[in-house]
Image (cartoon, each protein chain N blue to C red):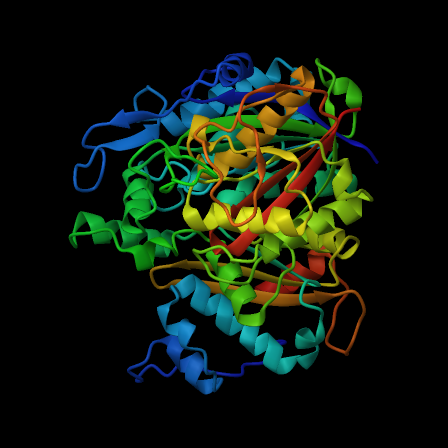
Length: 360
Length: 188
């Protein structure tokens, strides 16, 4: 059974539609700005923050993003019993309520959009978005649903910012994924959605084919990536094997690339081991910051746009090679036919995930 | 374990319930002490399953999928972490790393060097339909067995249920995997 993916949408500091976001990406504009006194000790912090009131922001982003999705697929699909909504998030609306916030947000969506089923919530740290998409595709392939809307959303909170500060993981300048002088992550917030379906014709714009996806734990450390990239190597190998493809067929890698020393080193080791270090690769964290549970969905939405427009987006923040294995990091936008894309993600809890997309 | 009580909490003991189980199971794994409650229960549950079914440890290192779920995410540790920066002077890194529910999957993977599939989902209550469907899906792909669990912890409320799903029946206590059977097992 073929699985189709499309109807992508993004809300971020770069814009409130997929068009606005992709146009800013093409111009290599970043959403990251400095926020005075934002840190735990009133430090100035670089963030990619959406300039609206924090009160109710989480619910507002979800509602707005999903309403736009309704314009790109038949609206009655939302209320079909064969459609499932998947919410990908790490912390939900944590500033509002500490206990039960994620479940509450999902319940609100069910009511608001008259969904037949309670949404499935995927919370796998920074790999949530990619895992949510893979999980959905598996459910559709098994015939349990025909269509799925996957929405990823996380917002910046004191909780998460102070936490990453306590780990000394926040960069004191906009993050520089894969660069020699990278100093850590920049937090971001955003909401993105994609639609998966077993039916090509539900999409207003022609979709892309979702080929396969898997996950793998690197069984190394709960908050530090394995030095060898074992989990990332395994998930990419498994995904290629299930897709019956080899690494030479990959035209572009949308990597995770957080901008921490260890993560980016680990990814370079993994792509080197996989023989993928010559493939053009970017990280979008220099534009959106690290949007945690939304990241995988935002970045997959951008992959779809890159494929539709045949443009590989520059990996913003990268200047000089500085990882154990040299990678082919995209230095300037490249206009090029892109048929097959590998999207990867890695996160706390040792979880790595990957998926492959292909033009029809 | 399989419907039988194998250990009872000693109300008089100075040790909390998890430490009592740890000692009773004669485990030697120093990482246990730094874990949050969610991970402690996930770890202990897995160790108990392994002790009762040696076959679990005979699978290849990427053949076991870890599928876990709950309704309150990592709320129990979230509360403690928030307290560290609101009331206790500074955000605690050792608490922060446990403020994601999927960390418990990482702890099990690290302990056992398991590189298989990972999924953490949040549902209002134990969803036997989802577990039955998703185990069957993974077993038809690149997975040979699924270690699953519902681990919901908030304050004094602890609801922990682990189960192991294999492709073939190996002994008499096994039930065929479907939503109804799972639901009955959970309610036991």
